[in-house]
Amino acid sequence: MITGPVWDMWPTIKHVVTLVKAGVPTAQDFGGFSYMGKGGSYLAPYHNWDSKLPASVKAMVEKRKAEMLDGTFRADIDESTPKSD
Image (cartoon, rainbow, N blue to C red; front, side, top):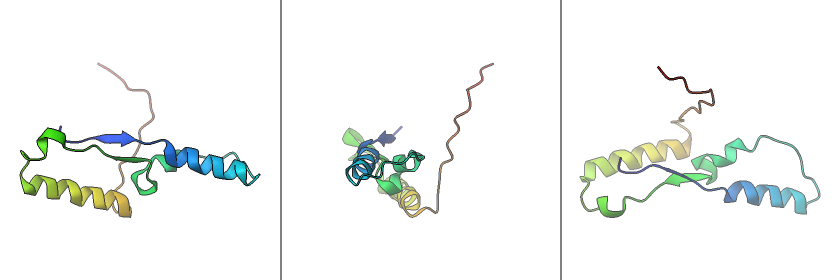
């Protein structure tokens, strides 16, 4: 694995605090705030792999990242209970 998702709770917290400060807290699905497009997650840095990875691999990762950000690629979330053999 060369990178992976990192969850950032800040966009969700910021939205909720804004609603509360405005005096209009509402129940809603905040799940969308965990997506990359809203800043709720991002790809971890390559760290020591940065100088070892071919440019073509990094370009592939950046292309997919751009697709996630612009909404042309979306990884579905499966919240079902995992089943084992």
